Image (cartoon, rainbow, N blue to C red):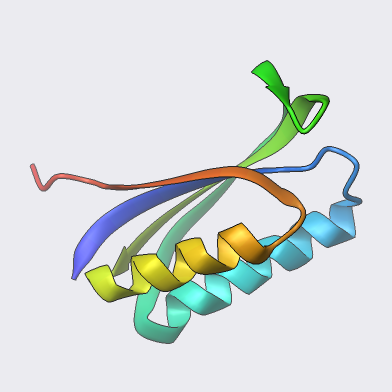
Length: 95
């Protein structure tokens, strides 16, 4: 299994319970065929440029191990989730 890091930006108008539900939803997808190592909630931050007419967003980073096939499914779910404004998944190189 490879190590990955995914970051997603949630619409700032989503309530705290909604953010927790999204984190749980994405963690469950990862845990179905991988393993979540760490979830890092970075909180609301100002965006470099407006996204969907918002000037800030709620940042969440998840470090995990998974097979490469899982990434396609995870990113598909990001795309169809209305409250996710942006996302990025990268593979972490072994040291």
